[in-house]
Image 1 (cartoon, rainbow, N blue to C red):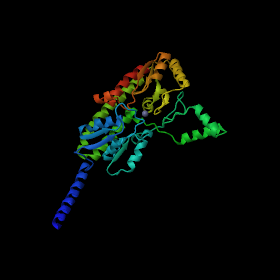
Image 2 (cartoon, helix red, strand yellow):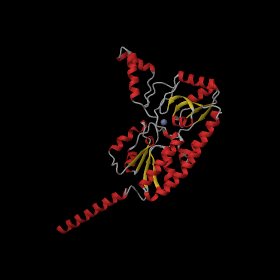
Image 3 (spheres, protein in one colour):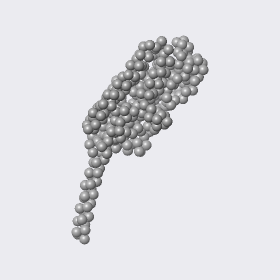
Image 4 (cartoon, rainbow, N blue to C red):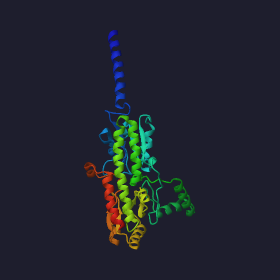
Length: 348
Ligand SMILES: [Zn+2]
């Protein structure tokens, strides 16, 4: 019996040792089956990583193709994928508030994280003339009427309360998270991702660098084309009967814009004032196109089009692609090239 328990003890410790090695093997030097495990939250960085990493990385996008990116909620499977990854790339804005909680329990030595927003220069989300006021990122649309009702319930002096609310808004400035909509930013992001992949997997560093350099050349070409279209355009103004995630894009090319809502608003119902303002702008400035964004409700653009005769077109902000496009392998470059044609029509 003594001998048997000794054998049992030895084999048990062998299993434990083997288990320990096996455990390491899964993520040895940040690798799995020789491939880095890379997880991206949404489509832009997924596509950038795909262009750079090719078949040398094991890449996963958390957002389901066709789904709305701002209201993304991770499943337990998604959380596990993040925790098991070598590199996790997210945007870093308000829509990613769920990320911090997950990363709290993760060993920072084993999981490298990159945010798009830390890679480029960011600007606050902007409300321009005519836009729906009282925008709220979480989608709690509080219109003026209900606010005043609340005011009269709790405060005698509603003006004072409004002031207080605006002060709070100022303290809590939301940065615009749609950094990828500018091809110039995309270039910076691709450089950063290539460096990170190369650092995690030095054996394939040259491969990543070569892919990144080739891809950057294409992005530079795209950037040049946009510049040309804007320079040769009859006008420098675009109008959106939709929310507006193109702040970085218009800043890059010196375009002026009017839109119904700021970039990440979950509002879809514009006030009569907002719609009237946009209709008036289109008529006064003789704007030929009213834009909407991808995977969006086109109702507002349609009613603006009916009232003005402006053509409805899509300018794709590349938050996500449809299931069909995902299966076809549609890329950021494909969608941006379509935007080039749409922009040309809108500026002439
Ligand atoms: Zn957005």
